[in-house]
Amino acid sequence: MAWIMDTVSMHAGHSVTASVTGKPTDVGGSEGRQEAAGRGVTYLTLESLKYLHVSEEPPTVAVQGFGKVGSSAARLLHEAGEAASAAEHYRRALEARPDDGTAAFNLGVALEDLGRRAEAIAAYQLAISTDPHCADAHYNLSRLYEHLGQGAPALRHLRTYRALTGHA
Image 1 (cartoon, rainbow, N blue to C red):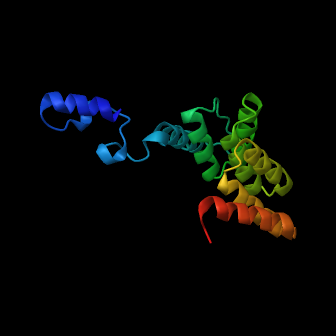
Image 2: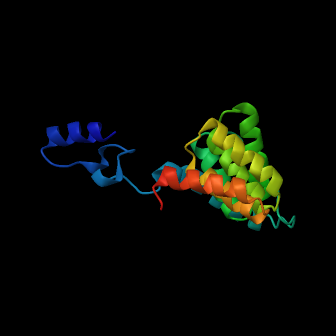
């Protein structure tokens, strides 16, 4: 979208940053724009639960869709403590798109937060099978295997993580 701003600015004779949305941050775009709508959905969801005095602990939240808004909302709700709802959402996303490495990775994070380590390992392995360069999945697997006392796979995934990220 920067090219549109550039064209408008050239015709105006000065920089017109307000001419278009979706610009990179270095030319006047907004930080957090990618997840802004999902953040709004998350905020409204959490505030609605308070307003409605929902007493279920933790409340069940369903997110429809796994595009830009749905994926951001599910991740942010998970970060806000809705791990069970996020895990279910990521499972549904994987049913629709079994090769979605991001959904598999996020499912692993949610399952790990729920203490379901074996399922988290399977989710991280799925993430790696769809994207072998997913460094964070290798790192998380190394931690989980180490926690389970399985040194060989822990070391293998840690070495892969270091090779992918350049960490010594």
